[in-house]
Image (cartoon, rainbow, N blue to C red; front, side, top):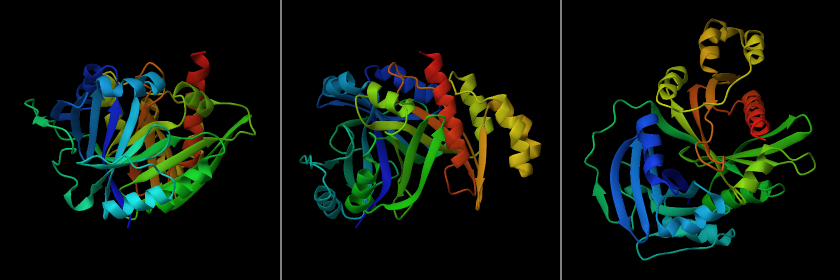
Length: 338
């Protein structure tokens, strides 16, 4: 019994049209279908294996008021929905069953709709809504191939409990852990992953014994735990960054000094440093290969949810040195914004 894959992610917003345009025009997603019922006005967009449901309407207003635009549902494909529901409830989740779907609470206001794995994927539409196929053009060859991982920001002191919740309740396994220090701030992380590898969540918490920092600021702006970022897997991150920048996506900057030290740290990427530098792309390695990544600025008023582009050249980890670089980049943005 286990959850195996992320079927779709649902984003609540108070401006559905601009959010849909952000994903379709800037990131190149294709609109698949629309639904207007149960107080929700939703658009399903897709690129590669990534399926996003973008929703506004009366049913989203309480969430938006508390948290701003953000992820409200991470739907999971399970090999046994009933068994997963029961184990999640036994681990502390609250069930929110409806006649045509099963859902359980996750972290904060984020829930998990549970779907049978045998029927998931492909062109399956999320259940419980009346969908109308989109009439627009399909997307060109995708830049984005997969949802590499979901990063979750949790209150300090709760990381271990949530890691246990996802291992006991959903059959995920602990994959790795990090402790990152930046000056007088620090954060801890644990990665949990499904047996299939189709679900990977990086759970993050601030170290409460250190000074408050960006994770504390996220928790304040988000009014509690939530999804900090979605990481989209791409085959050529430098080319993707260039393409998305030309369409209006804003990315975090990387200090020049990062690249001054890169040739000494990773001599086998020396020939690529100028290209990486021109796009501010970060690069790290582990025993399996290299990892290239870059992070967007949040496009939402509360400056909470943002996105990552990640290219894996064999690497299985998450770039421990790049975690520090991301932390520093977000911290510079936070300080600059006051």
